[in-house]
Each structure stands twice: as structure tokens, then as C-alpha cells.
Image 1 (cartoon, rainbow, N blue to C red):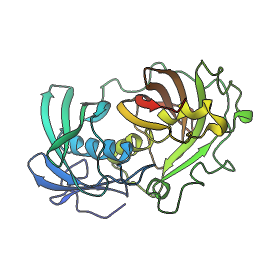
Image 2: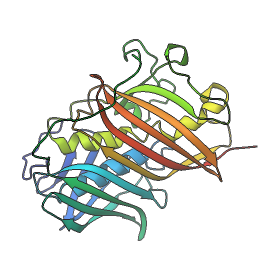
Image 3: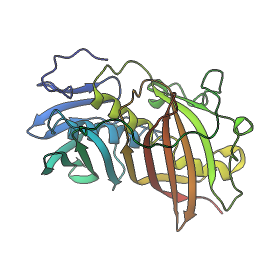
Image 4: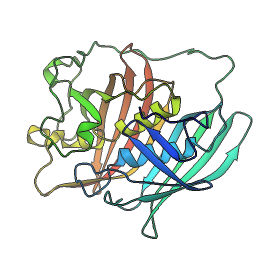
Length: 294
């Protein structure tokens, strides 16, 4: 993690906010920040996870020190250009005794391209987990699994920031998918490369970053090799994350994904993030534009 002199409990400084290699925001005034979100599958178009991470970092910088994010809901309105800076502005929506809500708007070249609301809460006094699900199977660990980014070029920004190990279908106890008209399912391990330090905000931003890379593309499993067909396009419309408990995003996390529906030029998917210890740490859902050749 880049060394900075901390001036806020969430890691901000007078100059800006830096979390490893995934967030780099410069302060541009009260509640205003600028930052460049790197490209994704298409290098000229910002990767959605990078946009989410930067927006969440801006929101975090504007809440009381005793609050941690528990949910976010975001809309991608226009493609964000990865070649130039974007402007992030935070708005106070609510500050209660336990909960705080912030809105973040991203503008680029005079046009709003992204909006997000994030809710933060003070930890409950009772603390602890009273009820939780458990994994019904024991998926293989990440060691020895295929590098899911091996086919990406050396210039891929994601490849240098995130590790992805997909569990082959023959190694899963549950069905990989339920036919061409049913749910498409897959498991994989993800972690942020490098050390994010110990700030909870940094790891929450890391979680936002990693949940975008493979979720909606699970819909490609109905095509040969699970690959995007030539002429096909996919783009995030909206993304939601529920953070159930703090976790380190720079350690291996099991991501269980299910592409549930494809209709009206859109695809919808759900995901669960589990710690290596078998704890459900986050849930997520995403809808995306999904246009495939006949």
C-alpha cells in the first residue's frame, strides 16, 4: 500500500485517497474528487469495478469514523472514458444515530455518467453473528487452478491488480448449469494483488472492485467454451452489494455466481462471496446490457 500520512480514520489525506493500486483520488474541493478509472475488457472504457471502488472511497471519506459500509446501489448511465479524469461529488443524504447515507455522482466532460448511493452503519453493540448459512460442499482451493486471466494481454490493467482462479465444472459437486434456458453457475477464487493495509475502507473498496469482473459475464457460459461470441456486447446497467461482515479483499475469497435470466436485451446475475473459512461475507446482484448475435 502506498505510504500516506493519515488525516482521517478512513485513510484520506489532505491530498487525496490512495488504496493500493485500485483507488487513487485527488481532492478537488469540499466533497469533490478527481480520479482516473482504468480500462477493462475494452481498454478505452473504464472497468466498472474501478468506478465502484473510486466512488465508494469518496463516500467513505465523508462519513463518521465509527461507520462501515453495509450496502451500495449503483447505476452506470454512460461509458466512462478510461483515458481521462472523472469528477466525483458526494452528497449528504442522511446522518442518523446508527446509519449514514451518501450519494456519489460521477461527471465526465459535463455529463453525469454514474450515480451511487451507499449506506454506512455503526457496528451493533450486541455484535457477532447469530445466524448464517454454510457451504454444503467443499470446493477446491485456488492453489493449482487455472489462471482465469491468462489469456488477457500484458497491457490488461485488471490482470495486474486482481487474481482469478476458476473452479472447473468437473470439480464442482453442484451442477455447473441447468441447461441453455436455466441458471448458469460457476465458482472461482478472487483476491486483490498486493497489500491493502488494515483500513476497513480499503478492503470494502477492494470488494467492490472484484465483484464486477466475472459476475455478469457468467451469462457467456451458454456459448462454446464459455467465451464471448464475436459481435457480442455486454455492459453494466446497475450493481448492488451487501457487505455482511468485514473481510480482507487481498486474501482469497470464493465467489459463487449464478446467471439467472436473459431477456429483453439484458442479463441478470447474483453472487455470494465467501471467506476461505466458510463465512458468507457479501452478496451482490448485477444487471447488464446483453446483446448477442443471432
